[in-house]
Length: 140
Ligand SMILES: Nc1nc2c(ncn2[C@@H]2O[C@H](COP(=O)(O)OP(=O)(O)O)[C@@H](O)[C@H]2O)c(=O)[nH]1
Ligand SMILES: [Mg+2]
Image 1 (cartoon, rainbow, N blue to C red):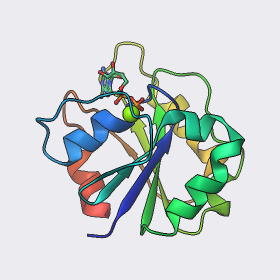
Image 2 (cartoon, rainbow, N blue to C red):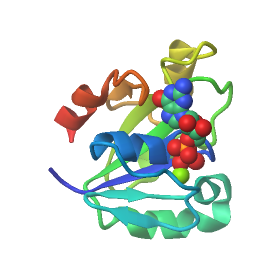
Image 3 (spheres, helix red, strand yellow):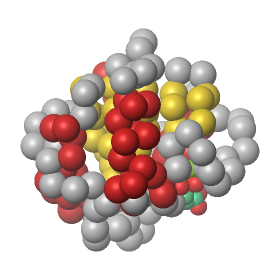
């Protein structure tokens, strides 16, 4: 398994997903800086929401094998600019989070991710039910 970087909006479920992928049990706190947790690099949502940080994200992407683009299934917009994944120096994997949520629309989330990553795998997940986690781990 390679190293993985996780990017996405504030509150999209990045740190919760990291915790679930690493087996759970740790307290998820607000991510203030790029954080190395075992084989996963968690990033603050502010880094994806402010283009001033793109250089930092791109530099960190050089250290990993895969970049996970996180899209919250409950949100009707995306923070990723069109085609963002094609500018990444590594393989992009789309991850839809919060599939369990009553307001989740996973088809909308997948369509939003496709604007940022025209090709490549997209996995629908929930940290609450565990949906998609095994499938995601097998991709990594
Ligand atoms: N229903 C549901 N809520 C989730 C899920 N993953 C995260 N959340 C909630 O979304 C909020 C933001 O999660 P967090 O991991 O801190 O987001 P981050 O800012 O992207 O790191 C928290 O209240 C989480 O409990 C999920 O799979 N299902
Ligand atoms: Mg976080």
